[in-house]
Amino acid sequence: MQLQYWWWILALGMGVLELVTGTFYLLVLAAGCAAGGLAAWAGAGLTVQVLATADAGPAILELSSAEVRAIVVPFNVASSNWGFDVSWVIFLGQATQYLGEGNATGIARMVQPGQTLTDRLPLNVTDARIEAPDGVRTALIPAADGTVVFGPVLRSGKYFLSWVGEAGASDLTYDGRVIRPFTANLLDAPESDIAPASRFETASVTVEAQTGPGAKSPQRLWPWLILAALTIALLEWFVYNRKVHV
Image (cartoon, rainbow, N blue to C red):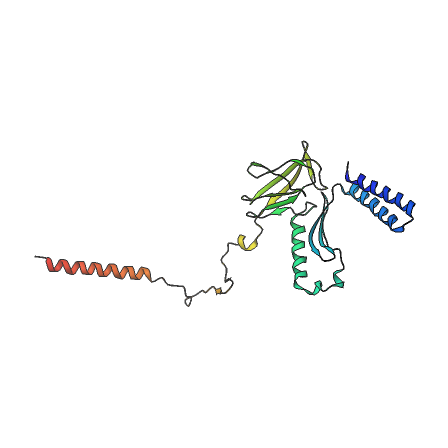
């Protein structure tokens, strides 16, 4: 039996109990169960995962389905001191990056070579696999929440994640399979810039390029030392031969 039917059965039971006892709160619970049934019917497999808890209950939750992915904070942040803590800024940055990398709309499904490709599929899919740019196919086993992981990505190009089952709003369907494309690009501009740089910065040192007659470059001494040792050896060999010459 599908999830929405259980919600509606609970709503009916709560409604009957409300008629018997006359308790208004049971009517509120019945309305909530009915709304849950509608959400389950419309959401088609909405899953909830608790990411963090507090003394009063869940503090951060993740809601996800084939079309929707959201991070929910179920309390008013303005009524707490979290907004004044550095962890709030870190949470916003990490949540934005996490939701952006797993974009459910399919607008920017990209990954860099060397990273791990992670995505979430609809529940109860079968025969999940990913096809690399060279045509090699790798079978994937979704987790309980539909998450699949592949990597590290070794080649740049197009990757095609496909399965048999429900399709998301932006997924493609071909020959009975649902297809979700990904692109592996080298998007780091500094790594792609091979032009000579006039300034190079590290964590502790900044090196400036120099031009003209006053430019200085590090000199290696070991070639001169080897040349001096070779000269001395040749001179010693010449003097020795002069002494033994008859």
